[in-house]
Length: 161
Image (spheres, rainbow, N blue to C red):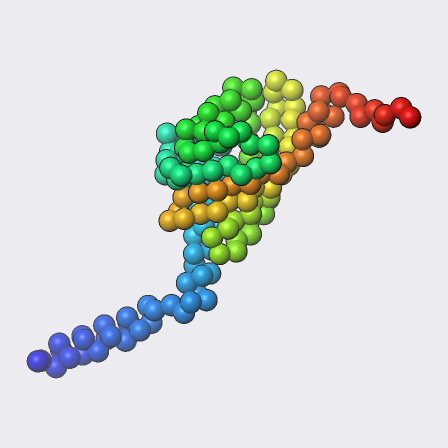
């Protein structure tokens, strides 16, 4: 073995030792990657309307576990159907992520949605996503359902006793 080969092997061994990550660093890297995927999902699918990219973000075995979600709230086809219905009703709908928090394979997105027309709309909520291999496999959505009604002129009337 030549001296250069020995030096090169030692350098590679040293570099590979630097490249190893502790379990804590690995977990933090996975959480950062999952947060980035949720940010990309929101931008690509909901703001840029690139619905053909849904399979890149949503797993085939995806399930929407939100309260009141229909039984067929599964798979990428459901996400596409849901998005198309939203865009038809609100063609200029835009989502802004206000906060992202990750814990293991879970990412919580606090978001705001706005639509200037046909009637101005402001909606805020939270979506909790569970990711596996960079794809969403489960989600839970909580949003303020009363606010859009009040924005459209509906009134809350207390019951008469």
